[in-house]
Length: 247
Image (tube, rainbow, N blue to C red; front, top):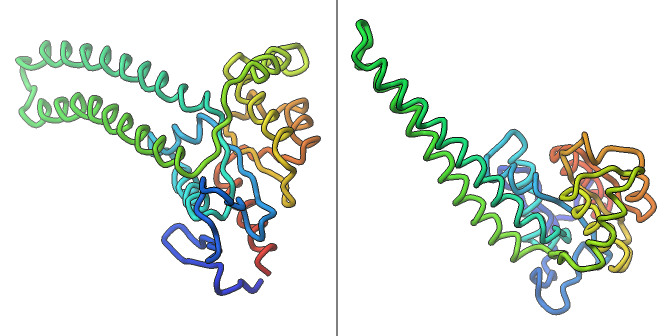
């Protein structure tokens, strides 16, 4: 399918579509999508963690953020999802610290054992030091990602309305944990409050066990929003919509 030449910019992550007349995201008058109709893309905590810990689908997440930074899509994230990664990092840092202490104790016990070589000692030290570095690196990436998202996305506050909706999503039909219920309530609240996008919306969420249920998908579908349970699949769907708009 032919692309409009003024809308495509190539990079290592694939095509990123840029409207030369786009007002910067967050600025007064930002149209939030191609042709002013806008494609809304909702993301949540796992999106941030995917990038922070450089997991399997980090490239897709990076591409989505770049589309938001170029003003090609309107990225939306519940404010609650800026809090959860910090708590996840705190728990992982504590777990890594405990593991580090256990490994250091084991290393002390093995250090003078017959046959324990200097090469083995250095290998153990490398593993132990990497635990601390990995946590520090992830913490730095979370801060960097948060800064980028605050610049290029629309944040949904945790309002009394959102909390009230979250209680309903904890009921029998949805049976979501509180944190997941707050995320879904934030997405639904914004879908109802904001004008309907001419190209609909996507909700990118890898938490299949809780969000890929019939009640959740139905609640989103009623509001013209489609759940995508992989970031790779979400990026593909976004590009399909942009391709169709540019043809």
